[in-house]
Image 1: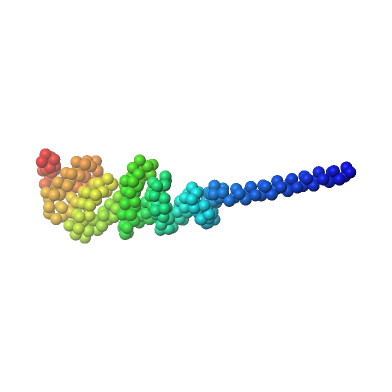
Image 2: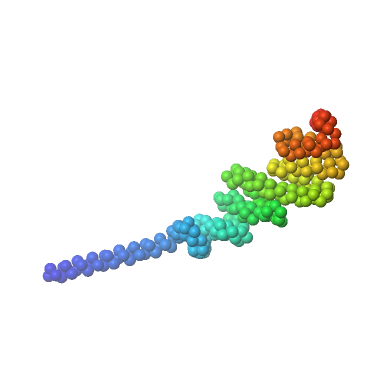
Length: 267
């Protein structure tokens, strides 16, 4: 009788353990089927630079749970992986899909900023075609206009200065080429673009000096004096002003040039 009771107790314990095990398995299956858990697993792979596996997992989340927050974030991460791998065309394409799909998303400023960064990362040396200069400039400008108070606007303004410097450098190189080959009108046009449109860049003092040189070589001494005076007024400590001063001084002497300098600003 006692043996039967012991056997019955052991049987009950086995059944109980079996039920608990099955319950834990079911619970684990449910956890693995939740978008939050799947996203964490994908993020772990991303953080360990296992990008291809992470990409597949993010895609699976978007497919299985299209209405979840994790699906949106997964789409953003897929585009970011493209950016990291320097597949900029696909990154831009995926970011634009997100904009069209979620036009009111809270991180839309980041999406526009990343499109601008994709263009910025493709900036070429100033001697090459400046296609991405224009794209980057337009993209960063869009971030500032759409999201003026965003944290990405400040960096966009800094990037615009760098892009404009890149564009100005290109104009300066072409202008110097024309100047060296005595094509003074063409050179002046390039230097004027730098002065008028990219005055915030470091190339403005040199551009003014090159204009002084071009006018001087063309025999347009009055324009040469006036440009040198403008250079001296705005950049009195610049080496380019010193070069211009020595150049125009050769024609009229120091006293005459200083007189014209004063007359230029006195009207």
